[in-house]
Length: 124
Image (tube, rainbow, N blue to C red; front, top):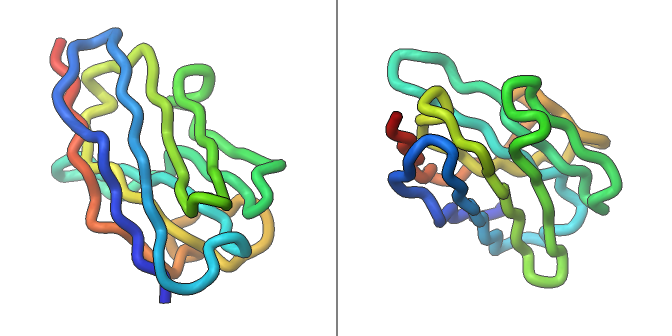
């Protein structure tokens, strides 16, 4: 079992930046690929970014490529999402997730463990 707790969400103006963090506890953190997903009101949960368990591979949704950066620190059992040039359409609840799959899965069904989410709101 892996417990995930997100932090760092908030309200920011368009063009601003936020850094989300996810702290993992429980079973060993390192073998798991980690990802961020988001869900806006009335929409399905969508993939944002993922990182392999060693950090050597990353994947991003086209909508955030060049603006968001995912990173992890296995020694501290944390994964972060640096979000720059935020847009109103980035407004959503952001979830951290852990997967035992190889590589950088992008579908929610590949992820076993989920955090409770942190709200990000971007005003225009």
